[in-house]
Image 1 (cartoon, one colour):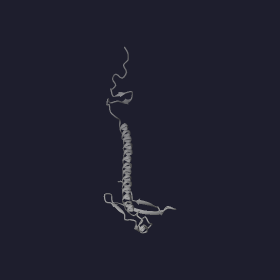
Image 2 (cartoon, helix red, strand yellow; image 1 turned 45 degrees about the vertical axis):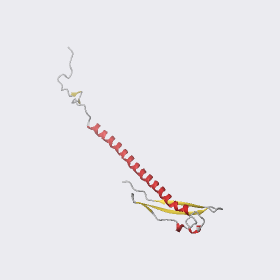
Image 3 (cartoon, one colour; image 1 turned 180 degrees about the horizontal axis):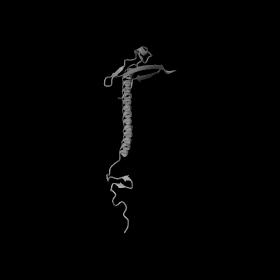
Image 4 (cartoon, helix red, strand yellow; image 1 turned 60 degrees about the horizontal axis):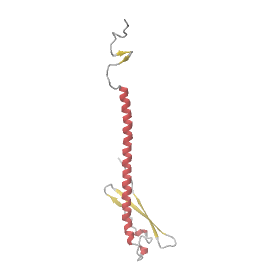
Amino acid sequence: MGTVLYKNRPQFLIYGKINMGQKGFSLLEIVVALIIIAIAVTGLANVFVLAKRHILHSRGRATASQVGRWYLEPLQRQVSPINFTNTCLGGNTAACDSTPWVDNTTATNYVPSWTISSITNTSISKVKLNIQWNEQKSE
């Protein structure tokens, strides 16, 4: 007859380790999993913040483009040579509309600045319009 080891030993003590027959996670495994999830969620939150910042910047650029067109439209009427020197295209920057345009939905001011120069050996003027605005800060 063979010898039976651990015959009278309790079932949950096997080779000096505690095995209570539970099929679950240890506290250390749960803590490690929570740390990994926290790192992943933090990374995703940063992606959302950067996406919002990019959307606000793109919206500002698109609005500035439309505002620039709005400022340049009246210049098309000034192309005629009648009293040309007193116009914005004639080099009189005081005649250029420099009133800031306000976007009421975002409370953003779009401020124009004009640079008018003549192209050498021609009667053509070059108009450069810069629109400046402050980026809206994302929360």
